[in-house]
Image (cartoon, rainbow, N blue to C red):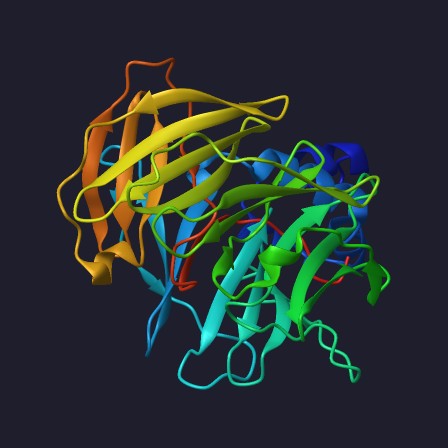
Length: 351
């Protein structure tokens, strides 16, 4: 293989698993330099975004582990233990957002933000001496995105002392800067709960839901090119119970799993078309779910089936009559911040 043209080596190695790329860096200096370039990382990442590379990472009080997903049964495969490479206390780590194999996490004992690739184990601290990169649970929101230059960035929306502030962190520049944030004054109430940001089509989307029956629910959008915020409506779901909207990017189209109810939960699937929501599927009420499981629900959609999951495994399978999705598309977070579905890549937190 040493006699092959560098272009051929590039084409071959951008198609191998991320862990093989890591081992290949030790072959020689030329390969190390090639596999560390931004072009290689970008192409390898684009070719890694397939269902067989998806993994489920789950954290409990004692262990952090990763499951593959078994596509025959759409359930979790045998787990492998992951050692957290940064200082922590009893796995007190919250997963806030993820994109292309990178996780944005918070160390709960210090409130520090980190970018972490669990496949390569590389991580980077984002906190600064002037208290930027410090996350406060139930007050702040985090979104992770990449710009046209493949600079991975973190949007941090902060609710402090009766005002909102927002900052963008650049991995390439290793620098936080303020961006204007405008929203309604009533959203400053701690009764409003932010979702993590979901990156889709050049925009970060957040749900903002009031934590009581009949409360206000909206979607906040951040255009990554203009760096401006705007508000769009929430899907017209019933307000007879608690409402939660979980966003997912499906083939660069934004979808929402909207749940509402109290003792029985109804789940609707919506898609966004030019700032308006279109109902894709409504399912009958599902049986009651215990609070301990409800805190960890996520969803998968693939090949005409819709799977409601928790960290313990599959709860329900719902058959869909709509056009089937071709591969597995996970929601981007587990409630409770103790899990994530991610893709194994070689994307570096320090790009």
